[in-house]
Length: 116
Picture 1 (cartoon, helix red, strand yellow):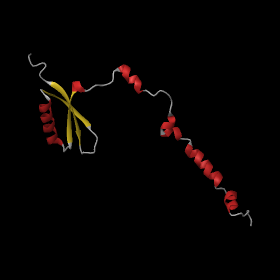
Picture 2 (cartoon, one colour):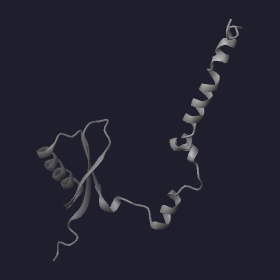
Picture 3 (cartoon, helix red, strand yellow):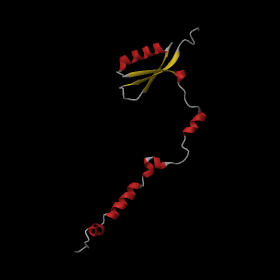
Picture 4 (cartoon, one colour):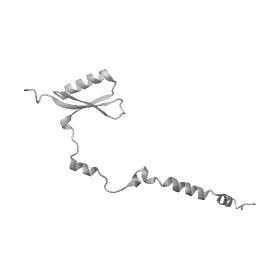
């Protein structure tokens, strides 16, 4: 067949509003970017309103190679950066509040002793 290199693969992304994030929608085959955009618009005009459509040639998308993905792993344990690293604070704070607000402590603020 003489048409083997004629069509290119494109990935279609859309935004529902100007402030919403881009969402992946589908792939399509088209001879060029302009026709890919027309085909994507035709598809969306029948389905849902959108604020913007992005067409990206699949060959222009680069993903990380397996050896590059290793750079995404954490180098050490930094639980303090996540909320689970602070799980003990609720218990510690409750203990602190109970110690601080006992009856003796409150009466001492006014210079009074229990039974006065």
